[in-house]
Amino acid sequence: MPQLADKLAAMPAHPRPSIDYSSLARQIKQWGRELGFSAVGITDTRLDAAEADFLNWLKRGLHGDMEYMQRHGSKRTRPAQLVSGTIRIISVRMDYRPPGARNSNDILDNPRKAFISRYALGRDYHKTLRNRLQKLASKIEQVIGEFGYRAFTDSAPVLEKPLAEKAGLGWIGKHSNVIHRNEGSWFFIGELFTDLPLPVDQPSGKHCGTCDACLRACPTGAIIEPYTVDARLCISYLTIELKSSIPERLRPLMGNRIYGCDDCQLVCPWNRFASDTSCEDFGIRNGLDDVDLLDLFQWSEHEFDLNLRGSPIRRIGHACWLRNIAVALGNGDGGTQVIDALREKMQHPSAMVREHAQWALNRLSGTLP
Image (cartoon, rainbow, N blue to C red; front, side, top):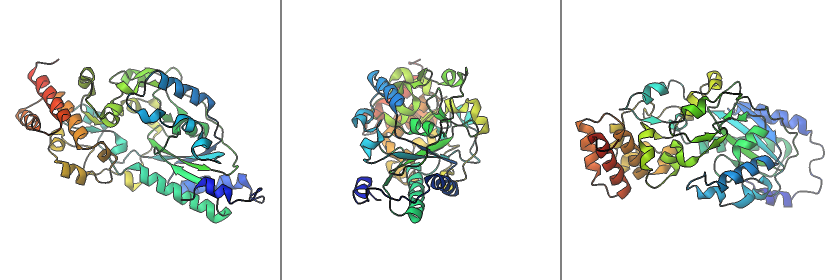
């Protein structure tokens, strides 16, 4: 992939004078749709308001153990510092809700089942989006020649949601996810940083109104105020980002959610307009939309690695996987098989796994609330 700074150094002082950038922008959006993106928008690099909000969020410690959020200084909020020469960002959406998935509420209501966030039922989205962004860049290059660019999708210090909002792909809702009034919020976001002076799109404006359904639905109260999430309380953070013990007071609130949490999206009224994905990569793998907790708890580390090859879930590692399932089993209705499986995990080499298995056993025995 071309490095933007290297490309710029090799370019003439007044590059590509004959290019009609308005026409190119229209072509880029058409190519994006042909590549499977549900929408493509273009924005500049100014993120002043988002930067202030982000720095305040960090100052309040709401990022928890995600120290990488502050590791890169202002590169996250000032795109041209991350990739020198960037003046425009092409932002894309790609739907991910898998067709034919078991109804989420049915799974959440069954304590023997494992709930996994809908985005993680298929292939890891990072490669899929980056590959298509690369194809989009290649199409541009075929028309105008070499240009500086770099593709991202949740893989670098990038404020993806504010950029998508500025590019007109939706607005950041009270739950902090991007929502589009015609397509809901079940989509991934990616970016192509470029040195092309493309015309920019206009933001759509916010349309949450007085609705607070997501705040009321959050199992742990992680949406502490409209548009602000305390990651330390968020089940997605607890089951994915946190690598140590889950705070005991939060475990009973997690129910059977073992990887991520979709509650705020499930209640969002705008998602009645959402579409299922047409991308085969995001189809259901290993029956993870409707699977028993106990079956997953019995996977060996080898089975975990094998069954989840190419899945975003694999990145949390086997020990965190067992930790999460132990909590879910402790929140369930027990039974001889569950008790035996938890007792077996008391011999696990990970102290974290043993701790959570013991907690589950105590809870099922009635010695914990």
